[in-house]
Length: 152
View (cartoon, rainbow, N blue to C red):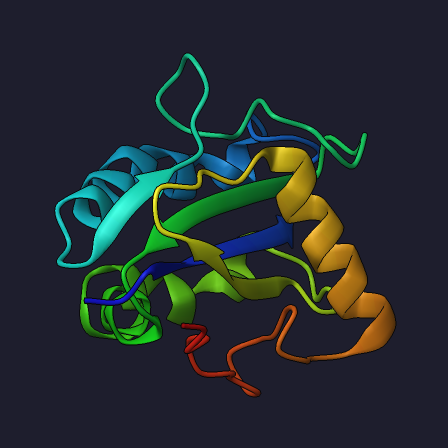
């Protein structure tokens, strides 16, 4: 068994002025479904959530239009299966209906010791680092994946 898990953060800039904007309604109406699907997916470990069972009230960028998602998975493969092979993929295909084009990297992944739960601040720092320095074994994206560390 490995001694690492995969942490990921993704952020998106909404077309709506905030999460309660009518343009976001269908996205919001399905948020619990998509989050529950994640939690019931093979390889799912943990996700960041607030009192409303999602993370839409968390605002690390001081921007009401930016929402974040942080989660932990057993592997890149289990995360990708959830992203691309479940109902979640329907949302990916339709993201232009709800979200603006985000110029910089919007997804970052990094390996964490098993049992570690990343803080929101840690996740935001990882994404900032990726945006400034590009992918490396420290933090990477879906196009440039780095294998799990094999430290003894």
